[in-house]
Image (cartoon, rainbow, N blue to C red):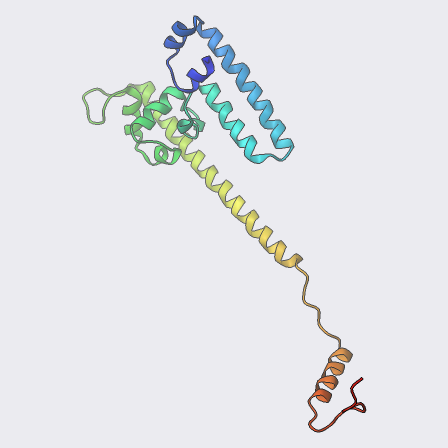
Length: 201
């Protein structure tokens, strides 16, 4: 029940009051569950269960960070954790690609809690964090493109190998071709009948 509330982004204060548990106890439950999910992920990968491994890996991240499923990819960017991911998502930056395409000044404004163009300006720490997040998001997107290109190349290579592995049509020998031609010519003769013509066997 505690972990369910965590991945639903229920504030820690509310969880503490609801279940009479301190912050250390909540973090301990999250860490133990995340470790278990990580072991299950490795087990699935060893067995070749890629889909199941991907699911448990995402669940591991959600448990560790205490986020909903919609923030999973965004939180994979270095420097973006649960509360920052929710702030960015709420303001329209829902994917790493959105963050990479955004202005650093806008990121800094969002992290500081101020609206772009307002009198409140981000401090030095918030500007530094915005630069780091923007750089990390750009790197994440570039690596993602490289992975997709590698997967596409692997698929193309697999198709080519499959084509090469298909059995080639057999070519008839010259003797066989001559025999077929001779039989065809015999069947096509007009007026020539075999020795048993007219005599049903």
